Amino acid sequence: QAQLVESGGGLVQAGETLRLSCAASGRTFSAYAMGWFRQAAGKEREFVAAITRSGGSTYYADFVKGRFTISRDNAKNTVYLQMNSLKPEDTAVYYCARARGVIPTTRPLEYDYWGQGTQVTVSS
View 1 (cartoon, rainbow, N blue to C red):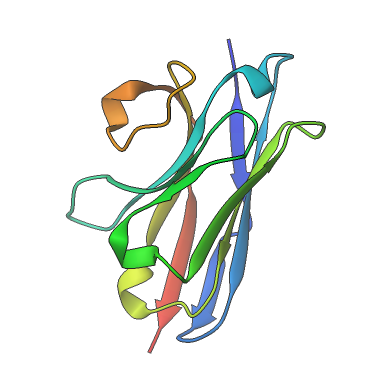
View 2: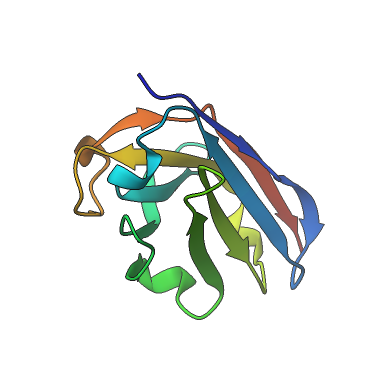
């Protein structure tokens, strides 16, 4: 089994930055694609970004393109989400997740392990 632990959330003002981290347990971290999702109050969980095993390819939701960057360090079993130019509508609980396989997707059902989430609040 894998355990994922997110950190780095907090309260910031619009236009500021945050960097989320997700530390994974286990020796097979590099064997799986990873993703970030978010869920705002009263809304469904939505895809934010994903990254392939090697980190060579990344994928983003349209609403974060150009502002957020996903990356990973397989030596540290960690995936990151750098969030720049934050907007109030980015307020949500952010989750990292491990894909069921090597292909990153946008669908939550294609991810089998999830972290507990970290709250990001952006004030206007």
